[in-house]
Image 1 (spheres, rainbow, N blue to C red):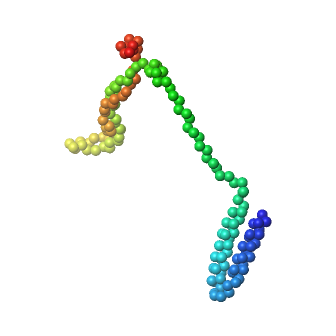
Image 2: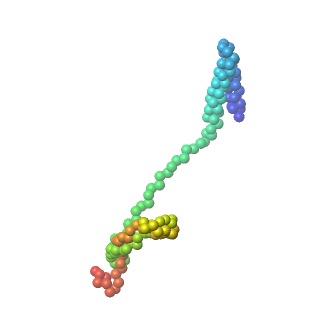
Image 3: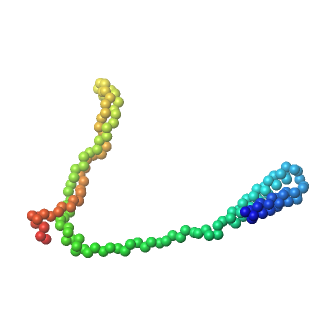
Length: 146
């Protein structure tokens, strides 16, 4: 606290001495000059105060590196023993997508009035999709004993 008071007093003294030294020129110039010198002194003084008041035991965060876990190896023959079956590719039909939108009333090409209603508009066509499906072997399956 004593250091801060001493720095503030020294700053005020330096600013006052500097402003009183220059006497030449109009009074308005001295006012602006003094304000600029004072602002610079305040900025410099606050930087010095903040530098001095920083705690000495401030620590920087140290990041520790964690090694990835060791890989776990599984015996391959143990996996094959419990998997009895095979993959089959099957075709599945995906239905077309429709979107319901409002169709306002209007006259058709023949000049007849068509009242407003909701209509279904096709957004996407239907298509065949291939999927891989796991088929388990039963006791009656010919590949069961392979």
